[in-house]
Length: 246
Figure 1: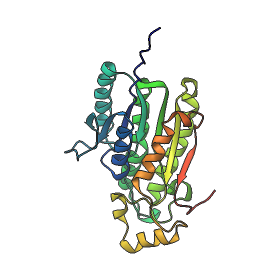
Figure 2 (figure 1 turned 180 degrees about the horizontal axis):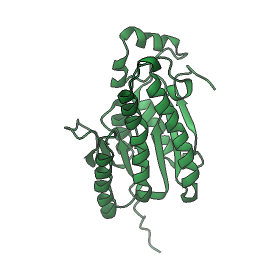
Figure 3 (figure 1 turned 90 degrees about the horizontal axis):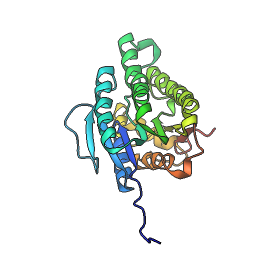
C-alpha cells in the first residue's frame, strides 16, 4: 500500500471591497490560512494587499464594470478551478436623514450597497463550487434603521439581509450557504464620516467599551467559510460589542 498523502485542495476565495479596512483584513486572514484569494475593488492603484493572488478592478455602482470583473474571474476559474467563497465586504456610508436625501444620493447608495452586491452574487453562481459559501457585509443599521447613520444606508443594509435569506433558500440544493455579518462600530476608514466625539460616544455606549477591529470581522468571515459552519445559512451574525442584544 502506498503511504503517499494526497495534497489538500487549494481553497479559492473572492473578496469584493478588498481595499477597505475589513476587506483588507479578510484578504490577509484568508491568505494566512492558505486560501488562494482574488481581490476586487475600485479600478485604481491597488494598495499593498497581503497575499492576494490577483487584483481585479470593479466598481459596484457600475453594472458593466461588475460584468467585466466577473468575466475576468470566470477566465481564471476556467484555468484554476471554481471558487469556494465569495465575500462582499464593500460599501459606502452616509448620515443623511430622509428629509435631506436627494434621489441621486438614494440611488447611488442602493447601487453601491445593494444592487452591486446582488450582481456580484448573481455573476458568482456558476463560478461557485457546490458546498461553497457567500458572506455579505451588512450593518447594525440594517436592523435598527440607523441611529447614527443615514436612511439610505440603513435601507441598503436591511435589503442585503433579505437578499441573503432568499439566496440561502435558492442555493441550499447545492449546499452553498449564504450569511450576513452585521458589524457595529468598527475602526475602519468608513468611520471618518463621524466626528471624533461621536466615535467616542459609540465606544462609551457599547457594553465592551470599545470599537471593533477589522480583524475581528475577518475572523468571523473565515469561520463562516470553514467546515465548522456548514450548517449555518440564511443567518445574520451580529458583531457589535453588545450594543444590541436580540
